[in-house]
Image (cartoon, rainbow, N blue to C red; front, top):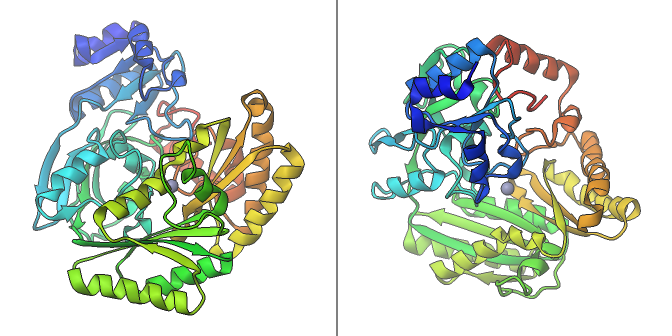
Length: 458
Ligand code: ZN
């Protein structure tokens, strides 16, 4: 059986890369561990995807679907005998319907391309994350991406109205629903959203668009203690009449990191508070929105909830504030970062982080710890930086310290990044035996011979 020859006969000579050409893509976003595949297939249509999958199914060749490869949990790693299926040639925005406020896209369209395409209709696609230029909408759906505006619009799951999926045997299930309400039986798309390519291959999507906000008000805020951070969230949400669009918390060390050289950003407020919050409101009324935002900030200050704040005066201020929050790359200087994405109740965060700080010091000794995240969603990113020489030895110890205490708080080992290969050993912390058994039942029903993204999640 010649994989390359067979696949080329199905979808064309140039549409299939051999192992060497696949490996030569190492520059750029492709990580080395993704390059060990037998072939990389680049189908140009759903029918071609189906043909590739059908062939792989018949010949028991395992398939890993690749989107933008910006995931952080090794969810798209392949093995040398497997085929990578890349949807990079399926990049057409097929329809934007301003009245229904939907977009129909092929799965390889990047998040940013859709965001830009809907602007001229005064619409927005509200999912937003740092990798927007590379991440694909199919990948966003397969991993149920989150990002910065979940507090207002929900996760990817909440923005998908319909999907077209190629099943493990090559059957095409077209469920391209355009309706917001459709309770006609099981909501099939939800089984595939967040399934990390293990249940089917998403080829097309119908996405829900929203009205483009016209105003933006932001503040960078300093706070004394965590209780005030939690209270400030409720205060702003209550005061802003539904226009709160982001509430990002940063522990003091992270703020220091992104506002001190070599970082390019300058600090909008002093660097000695234990907690910082980036709060954003998006609305539609140029005068009232700013007034309401400033009033909410003022009452927070007067009641002692916040101790310091820089309020945006322009779009460029807003841009600068977001740049600070997004400058996660700074954690790569001077060591290797171990990156976590966890969820837990807001009420448990202070105790959890204080305990983590203590136990990490005891267990791994010298390290750096940065904590920040989408507080409004109960989602923290914890980054522990260690020296390169210690990385392999310390990584499992760090994982243990970060994940084990989550069970007591009914927290999650993955808030928005998924499980992939990286978090497989820890899935049981957040899911019960019966939940895991039901997941396996579903996997077995939809992919009985296990050819789709084998070994991922569980
Ligand atoms: Zn995040």
